[in-house]
Every structure is written in structure tokens, then in C-alpha cells.
Image 1 (cartoon, helix red, strand yellow):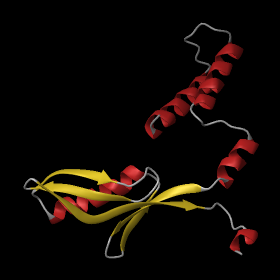
Image 2 (cartoon, one colour):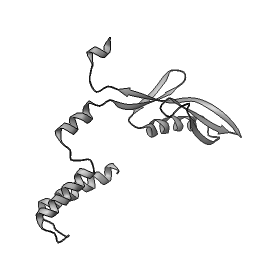
Image 3 (cartoon, helix red, strand yellow):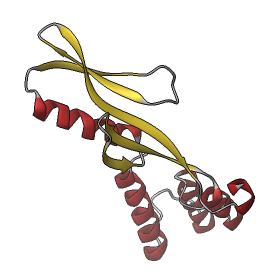
Image 4 (cartoon, helix red, strand yellow):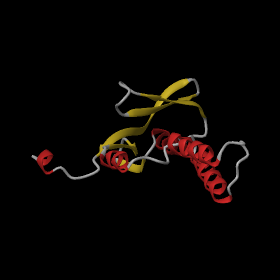
Length: 142
């Protein structure tokens, strides 16, 4: 579900509850329950325990970089990091016919490979997944 769809769901649910809309013909208690279920299913309503669990879990970020050691940026999605690298490669060489990402495994770094004039060329652009801890673990430091 996109962020725009989530926002629309929340806005519609709040408006319906505030204005007492009931286009379904259901009893108000059933309508509010249905709205609460929609918010829960959208991942917008959860228990404090679940929210704490999600906040404490390690997260993955993706570093877009060049093989020369230049960090281009850090992103919360692999796709955003890929787009950054691809855009720079296309600026550097307008004759790129196609671009693809090569990786030795699904969880490791990926290299941008492009086709120019019928030849595959490694660009030197890399997307590397990094696991980021939510908090400091003193025991893990040793």
C-alpha cells in the first residue's frame, strides 16, 4: 500500500467517524469496528508492544556508492539506491542501451552493469545493504 493510499485511508476513516457517515447502512458500532479493522490492516494501528518491537528491530539501509570509495547516499529502499546510481551512470554516458544489477547472492552488494554499443560494461556503481541496529548493545561491542 502506498503512503498516499494509507493517508487517504486514515483521512477517510477519521472524517467518517467525526461526521457520523454511514453509507454502509450498518449500525454505528459495526461501522467503527470496520474502520478500525481497515486502519489495523493498513499497519496504522498496533499495540504499544508491537510498536516497541518494530522500533527495536534492526533495519536495513542501502548505501549507493562508487567503487572509488565515494558514498553517494544512504536509502531505506534498495530501489532508491539503485535509481541514484543508474541516474549518475546515465548522465556520464548517454549511450547506455540497458542497465542491470549483478550480485553474487540476494543479500550482498550489487554492481550496476550497462550495455553500451553491444558490450557489457561495469560502471563501478554499487548498492550495498547495511544492517543498522536500533540501539547500542554494550555486550556486542566486545
